[in-house]
Length: 290
Image 1 (cartoon, rainbow, N blue to C red):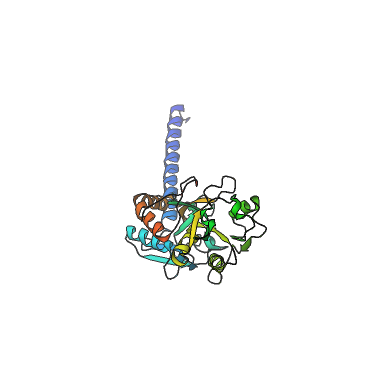
Image 2: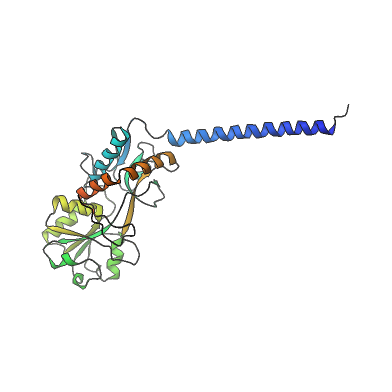
């Protein structure tokens, strides 16, 4: 017996609704699985930190660096202990730690790097000129200053300040120090400051969060001047975030909230360590009282 058109249409609508409902259920299931996959990777029993064991004064296996103190602060706000995965912060660091799911956060990572997902930045710093505090160079605040001409200046080879030095005619007599090293064996920053103390170089240029704390703790006869007057590329300032795995938005948002609510305590840790803080545009030094 022929089926009426209305019955066919009713059956079609029922089939369509069934398919639609099934699709929605599958989509919801897929979203829940994705959420579980990206959220459940983060430990609920400890703040698992990826860190260099010998990157003094930033991080050390003895937990003496300012990154270690920052990790303790964040862990205390989460009511969790800190657990470390140690690996030299050179080639393969992210791949062997964060991406290998051995840990859940890198405490200090420059904003915008494609290897990690960045939290909101919690401070901005810059490369700094380090000189003896009693020399006339203590008044120098820009690499274009003629008082730097003809001097032997230490710089990390391949770092952004080297380009500025070349532009200002300072590279000819420069002394280069290695960039990618295993700091358990070699410490270019300490070697550079030791050379400055010994008079083998006249000035040093180091990343502020590294050089500033070193000077404060071990080289009090020196002064640190952030290079905030350099306007041409490459930039010498960077906004520093915490780094998490790509796709872990729930964890990222949780850390963003912790940063926002505890910024004053974070600033206190950085200032006490001697990290030079600059404006978000890298054009002014911030004065934050300890």
